Image (tube, rainbow over all chains, first blue to last red; front, side):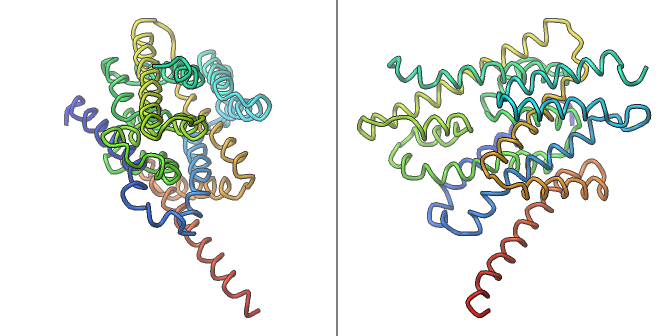
Length: 112
Length: 232
């Protein structure tokens, strides 16, 4: 598959999957929206999925070998969490954390 | 269109422009595709966290099943937005499909919190205009970011961290809304198990299945406990 076919198919699938999450309640759940199992999953799944994504991408982005031991990602992660708990400004937390991570990566702070 | 309506969308404008620009810059920095794919994704997919995750899925050449599952699960919170708007969108005719398509976190919060004084038909037309304006801000942000990333030379090494930062912020927001920590621990533990046991390509699906089944088990356990109580 060439790269244009791949990205066009990718966008189509992503669009269908996203639209599905928005249209399903209107198609199927209008009579079951008070079912306790749906309420239970709906209440807790989003939070669990966010934490899951944090762990998966944290392990993928970090450098785990010596002498870094994940500090290139763990330090900006803690900064994002503390900043967000303090100011609760999503864009500020994301911007500062990303800038610090990029600075660490580009200056080779932990590797040289 | 009234200025009052435009004013209701201002917070979304200030949120969507910078986030859309961040997505656009990330897209051109990480991928070797034309800049116009970024606004195209804003038009067809229209999901902030979803599109940012999509960049790393495209970069990894993810399989289409993983793409579908990842996007569906990441956006699964939208399932529960629709439930509270079933009545409000009733009878909106041709506009209804677009109102459902455009149901992002931000649009949902504007549509459910704004004052409604006019007739049902008039308010549904206003809902439609608000949804359209919000998507316009998002698509413009995506396009501007992608053009910037394409034309302004700067070292973008490490910019993908924005995705991780976004998920940390959303985790904290979820925790603040729920007031309970166990779903966060369940998710983190499921991810750790999946990373330990599965190859990279299947970790995301594996962790999501693990988390969903833990919630199912927990639900069954909870209901069986509460039905036993009258006897004990």
